[in-house]
Image (cartoon, rainbow, N blue to C red; front, side, top):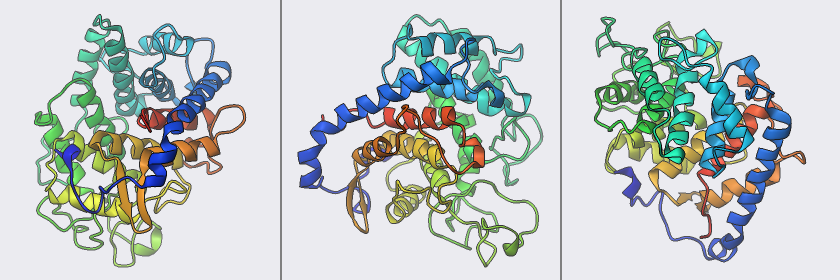
Length: 371
């Protein structure tokens, strides 16, 4: 498994200065986290338990999942009221969503929240809802009962509401949701999703048969597989030769998906992704996107690296303890009221509730730093 990687590009001895100073990082992480949850409770959550309901139920799910993953109890108001709100969004079709156009995304993150609540409660209170939600998202995957063959570049992917144009972000959430339901890596739905994920990587190998496979070849990942003719001058996402630029949040989303799909350490896809991660390591920006989508980037960064069990990344500038780096950066960028927000409005990251939920989720993956 990737969790046992011993790659020279990614694992090295922990620098002495980090070992000496990391004992205090966990206490600093805890303080930052508590301030973040105080903001969400006091300023982010509405009377009905929702958080930023104007954009659907997704932010509420992210906030609840972040709370539980960081050790909040089921009785904590942010959690208990948030769960009540999510229960009200359970639909007759099994999905858990407020917005029909976000059925997959909202159901996937709701599954992650309810599965965490189920684990904490230990009484199976959400078993039925989770079973139905899992069945619902499986039906949204391209290639399931709709005649799309594996040769189609969209096969195995999932979009925001389902079978429309799939993207790597939604497909990554789909895989993560299934894994939170204890779905094994060799489940047919995850294997189908891996086909799509592999086609979103800039890697000229047997798993990517798209026209983009040999144009960039840096091992990173991109968001969507275009089906229209590519005009390199029409968008910054294209390279001059008509390739698709890799960027940070998608590379970590892709790498996370490889981990959840059970790839071995010597798989070329994993090696190539880690080479990109090592070469583009940053917490100052979402590499390839500047500060656009920065807090979603922190979320994929933390989730992917925690899932892989990597502790240190060997960058060109030296070895980096990613957990400590993440904690210290988010401590520095936290606002006095306990929130985080992005000055770049893209992907709704001008919403402090969304950014704070993403930041707290990422910090849940940095627990135990220095212990």
